[in-house]
Length: 108
Ligand code: FAD
Image (cartoon, rainbow, N blue to C red; front, side, top):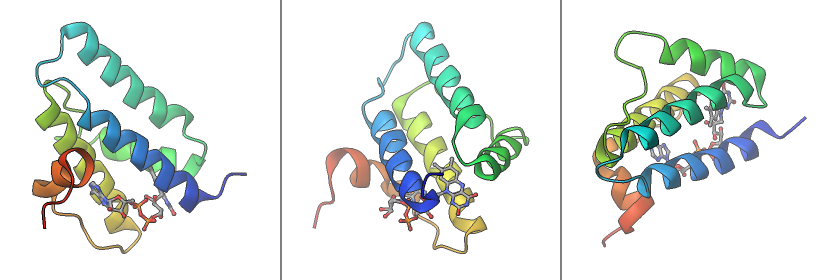
């Protein structure tokens, strides 16, 4: 079975990179693709208890994927990741900084 931590780091890299290059104004077709991608991931993610908790979180009010723009999708992905951070006792990430971390690079 895959190493759950390594799998997670790789997957979050893919997911945040995906939101970083998502269009600012996606077409309806692209929005559907994003929804399908996230839904499929939540069904096939190869850590079954992770996938189950992720599906349960997504199905709660307010947690459905938001894919109408890059800003919205990036924010949603950050919230999803923070939910896992909380569950694992890790620090929460400041979602005001997701683009700096994953798209434009830290300015320091
Ligand atoms: P990661 O959490 O992998 O984060 C990588 C980098 O992303 C961080 O160094 C930081 O720079 C950045 N980052 C952190 N938080 C955010 C955020 N909110 N928004 C944007 N960037 C951020 N592991 C389990 O043990 N149990 C689970 O149930 C579980 N469920 C998971 C569900 C999903 C959908 C995914 C993708 C992963 C899951 N994982 C789970 C793996 C877990 O989230 C971590 O990836 C793993 O523990 C390694 O953590 P890490 O500390 O190396 O950093």
